Amino acid sequence: MERKQYQLGDIVQMKKPHPCGTNEMEIIRLGMDIRIKCVGCKHSVLVPRAKFESKLKKVLRSNAEPSADA
Ligand SMILES: [Zn+2]
Picture 1: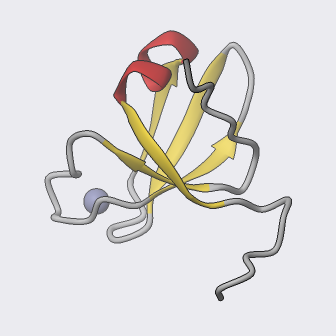
Picture 2 (picture 1 turned 180 degrees about the horizontal axis):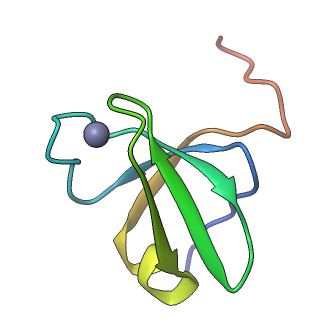
């Protein structure tokens, strides 16, 4: 089973796009709850970690490892 790894500053894709049409969210706070900010409209939401992980589709860009195909 694949484990999703994410950290502060990562750009992630959720299963459902934001109402504004953008499907890229930036992780701006990590804790018991996770705050993500829509890249498109800058709206931010606070979601419990379990809910975030269930809605997370994939990590698009990680802050930690520079992308090789950038
Ligand atoms: Zn948005």
